[in-house]
Amino acid sequence: MFSNCNSADNRVELSSSENISKTTSIELSHIRDFYIEPTSEVTIDRVHNIALFNQQGDKIAWINSDKNQVFVTDTIGTHLFNFGSTGRGPKEFLEIFSVGFDSENNVIVYDAKLDLFKKFNSSGVFVVTYAGIRDHGIFASSRKLLFDDGHLYISVMEMEKSNDKNFWKSKTIAKLDQNFELVELVGQFDPQLNGTTFLYKYPMVTIDPGNENIYTTHRTLPFIQVFGINDLRYKDRFGLTSSSFKNAEESALRSDPIHVRRQKNLNQSFVEESFVSGEFFFLQHSTYSADVITYGDTFLRQPYLNVFEKNHPHRFLGEMKMESIPIHITNENQIYLLKDNNPDNFTVEVYDLVIDI
Image (cartoon, rainbow, N blue to C red; front, side):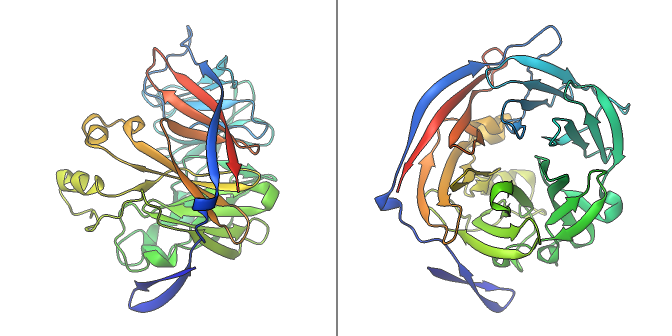
């Protein structure tokens, strides 16, 4: 299937996915729930609904935004360790922007305000601080730090191109070495975004080491680009506009008063962090209600998962309306959902995703 769009006065032909959702079945089979309880050292407070799983899948890092703290649990909710507080010291943070586990289970934190990477070992003990990325003329948009074979992959934008005139010319993927030095800057904005407005267009990345792919998405576009991990070259594009994905007739602008921008956002779907399993790619998107805007709690959004075959031709298998926020999908299609972010009842559900084609 192909769809055409106008892009900066040039006619661009863009591939999209074949829709076979009428002949597929996607169901959830409940496995278990677990609760995360406060301890004498850790309070839950306002926790990001983006959780970071280690490569072995047995540890989860959570971010307590109110206290600039990271706490780590296992996958049944047992508290393992925590670190951090507000400040400029080696063990402190001004803004925990993104977190990840490297291959040795060290926890890496990127502080966006300090522009520093900080490493803590597998027990949460501070190890070392590394310089950030701004000296390379880029800033990060990744909420997850994704490691493979000793390298870190993050989504970025080039500072000099972060404007309405040419943001779509920016590279979108930074590959860093084990000392967080820039190795290569690659990737591209989806061609459908050429000549559009800048707001909400930043890239996000998902990596699939087993399939040697990097996937990039953008905040207001339900399409995915594929790049190779080894050569970092463009490979493919897939996706489609599903029945629940909203495209605002009038895009929000940076120049809009905040109340106007918020009203426009009610008519726009937003792509969230996506997931990849052994067979499938899951594009997460959501709609925002007036309650999200009123209370500033993105937990109140309505999430969806669009399911695609991860290998070419990337057929579209269906869309699921989720009752809770997806935070992780394993290689075996087990999905973790954040059911309740209330500090007094912080609950995660685990399901099997059963997909029949």
